[in-house]
Image 1 (cartoon, rainbow, N blue to C red):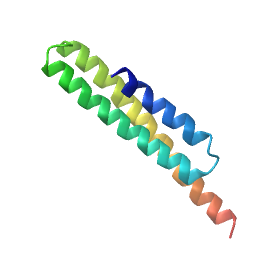
Image 2: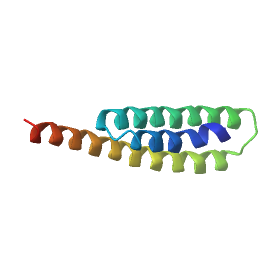
Image 3: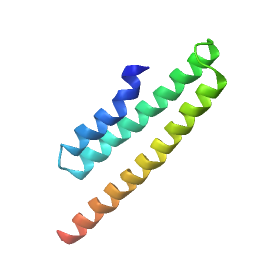
Length: 89
């Protein structure tokens, strides 16, 4: 779970370093996938009794915030990509 929790930010950073909208978007999508993997890990941890329902709910709330922010960033990148394509015509 530690590695999974660090993966989203690492993917965002790597995508940002690519300097191309499409690559950045792809890495953000991978980041989103990592967040869903983390949700799966949380479900397993709760089911196995490693974390409480309250801990699960708190972590899910944080992940949901991260997903909303990430989806907003992806939408921004897609709009910026379209704007760049329009300006280059």
